[in-house]
Image (cartoon, rainbow, N blue to C red):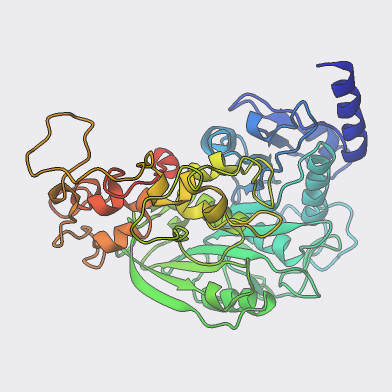
Length: 487
């Protein structure tokens, strides 16, 4: 690094804070001494997991990766997150805090004060604790959006953090497994960030919720729970009332699209999705999966052969980051429906980057076109337009100069690199996924990265039966297998 670069970097860091340092996978950094000093916590521990792709560059550029808080359940530990979250593969900053045998979101035998003593200084103030962690991460140079993924008691804390979202708790989205919002009381536990329901002018928060309808500990239909130790003041909303509460807070119209045709490996094998997103403001995603017959382990379910941890969870974050509400974006139309694009049309804009993260270039979009081609830069230009090599199917193969060569004859070509014949590229109209007859090749085509590995009842994969969706030579495009590799 030359003298000018060094001066520039120092000036940048003095303006924006400390350069964020990366660590080796499965060897997270410790924030424990900084965060835990002076707090009434006996088990306090905080780990910070920063992949190299998320570290501040030598030029002082901040990749602004999403920051994800992973919240364990009651009696759980933060020690396994560094080995299981795959943040170094997906490109997120992981934060793994340890609770005091759980999180102080309701009555606890270990508490020194009553739940309604908001000035208590002897019990865990979870809002202040998490706010301090986020503040420290920010001071080290982590500037991306903040998310929380929680299971059971950890989901209760995720709901509370989101309900108190604001400058101290800048929560963008939450993934909550097997716990919904409290109906009462309005507040509980120490501190000011202790409200149990969203409101008071706090910002909108995207939510992905998964619950089992036969949960014996946290009732799907709401009411009291054994976790509250007999204190009837603490009452849970029903799962759907909880979603309606979030819909109302987020400015959504409250109507959901209900799809009962999802499959799962738990309960009865059926899951129903309630999607409120279409009625929400732009950029807000609100979805709930009811795992029929599922119990308190429904957070570990697979839905449509995809694990909640962390395939569906990360897909949710990617969509929130992308800023669009719906399903997979479509490729940008070319000027002529029949002509092949010219070389110029098929060249990526090397200056384009997503509006939330300068590292989200066209190369990054190419890793997951179905979820990223609809992303925009700060000027509102979509990746569909700026990144044709990833998003324009006609550009995924080298363009053919005009005039176009005549089509191949019906005689088979021996070369293994030749384009497939028309017959090879025809979908099997009788194929359907083994769990749902509606999961035809057309359904697979809506999300190839997550569905091309599905099988029918005879064990035939969509990769073989649905070439129009799954064979790049038949439908040229860049296909990602990132999420499937995490399974």
